[in-house]
Image (cartoon, rainbow, N blue to C red; front, top):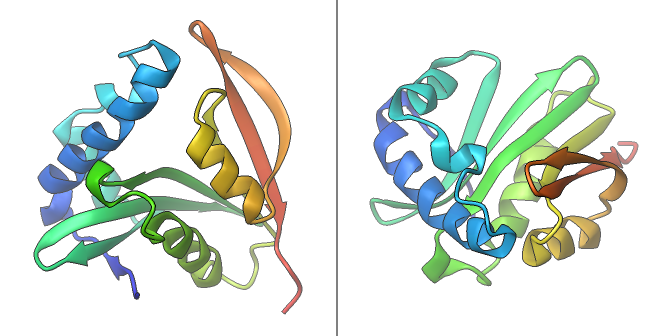
Length: 155
């Protein structure tokens, strides 16, 4: 499995995938106002057009089935919006994207950060299994955001 860089023209499909995937998280958190569900098509287009943002994805034929955004800020790569189509979860796409994003980070990157909701059982298992450790929590409406970090292994 090799991810591809997603172009700006994939914005509509990416937004549809994001909403489908985050609906599961919204139900778990009893909160339909999660930021990924409120993001607009123009905001997704802007993220895809931003040279500071890299968006990786997997396709099954023409359909995008998984994606992740990466923003490098100095020595840290921030991973966000890691999504897998609900009907394709459990097939290894999340792990493959996480590992690909880490491997593709510039050599200057010494660590990775990401966040997820406190009731996001699947993502929390995934991130912990791959060496991410909770650093702190912050309030997000009626629930907590879990902040996780990982130190990049020496090459």
